[in-house]
Image (cartoon, rainbow, N blue to C red; front, side, top):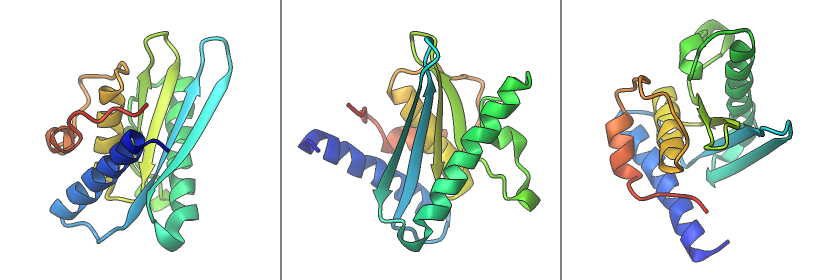
Length: 159
């Protein structure tokens, strides 16, 4: 991993942990990021990154990150216009916010999901990362943490 990529990955880790702590969340040491891209030509790409050390919760966080993407993708297939998993929360079924829908400039559908922080922070960091990478995002999306996430992630673009 290049020094620049390592620095950016650490910046994302610190932004997520800082925002989570500022909102009074449980002390964390890491979280999981997943991205799924449905390319225009029909191919799929899946990426999963570990930020920091989620410890014994790594598998659980991976499961929830994937569940959030799957739920959001499935609802969009059914014709719902959801742009975040926060629009279909069911706490009794352990279905949390944390995934967002965006598009690449070539029209490919992309889903970003984070799991391991407070759900509102998961979603704010995912949205802000999509924005910083130049993805098309729904600008009507509301999250009270967005401005702080943008401030903490200012200038962060992954290679």
